[in-house]
Length: 560
View (cartoon, rainbow, N blue to C red):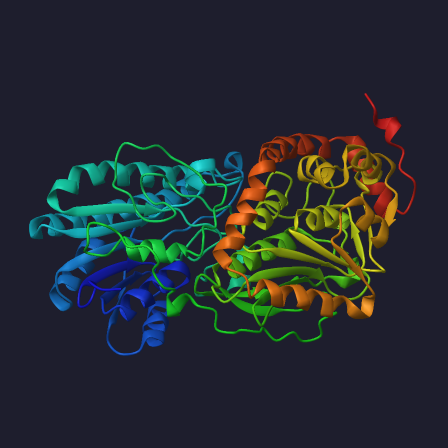
């Protein structure tokens, strides 16, 4: 990349997360970077990672206009004329809107909307006076779809996108170009630690990068897949293939800062946002709460419910809850989404292997102990299962289900969604939803019928029998069945072959296969809201109670 050497850039919230990745990349390209962060210590950590004196840290509360003005003046005096501004700082505390108060609204609005207004108003006049500059606003997919329990945050990010478009038109003839990027899942620290933040119910550091675990999206006319278009009168647009073909979100951001009026594609990955470990150590792999560390978008992530490893060119994502037959809870699904995101953005990964720890289970669906009308996480049903299912399809790399035992309920759906399935002879497949007051309508039903036929799919859902690996193979649900002792070798044989194939050809092939069945996505999204209503009924709750109490359910007593 050329054209950024010795230019001055401000990155708000550069102490962690996406902001840290952007800051390190700019510094690597020769920029002099000013970090505006409420937590200067986090900013200094970023500066230490870069080494040298390319990064200078300013303790700034972006919600304080006077503080922003003073810091901008200091940057101009100490580093030189500001060429680029990246508004990355953000904060939210998810909660149902009707349970929030004005104090929380004010805080969210001050940081996420007033913060960028302050920095624009302080920096853009300087850019106009000099006849040029670049502004990048980190928005969110929450602005496009709205996010459960984040109404005010979503409103702020929607406002930021509209503000960006408006100011882009106002300043375009003055040589100041603006762009917005809507990233998806990432984790960020607030200086108090991830665990502390989760206990408080907050999802990011005050001035950390955002957004946690929601589907990727982009604002059309602001940022797109293969380059950055001119800012014309275009609406908001979402790409179902939200991960993109071998592109990183921060790559899109950096490319928008290039002095050339025509952005460049194919930007290389930032060293600051690259994974630090090719293989994450797994200690006591059969422990339910095994922790493994990785890096997602430049921020270290601690996994408790899964293990993430890279074996040669294959990313292995292992559900690590063998004591409950690898059933997933809200946290498990969140970590799975993060792991798939990491694999998608790792250029050295050719394919993904999804499996379960131990020898008894691949996955047995939702953990019923965490389900009494709603699961324990976020999303429509307290479980962002739609995002996990979507990312398995949308990741542009082949996903292999390594089925080492029970693939029941939601686990059967995950195996169905994977591009390829290799099963041990000991594996068993099936559905149990109607037994426990649940159903996975959409991918679990309609897409299953694409694999095994309509009659067989109805049999699996209505009768709830279990099927051997050989029976699943004969139905068309499994590609290959091997002895248990040969399972890993069979998986490795295919991952080695995939590593020798053209990644772009594989991505195009996968997308073309998906195009034929992508209408099921709408069925699944619609059905999820219907299932939420069903979960709130005594009939559904009877199934959960009976399962946990180890008795036969009596659904008919609850019919109205």
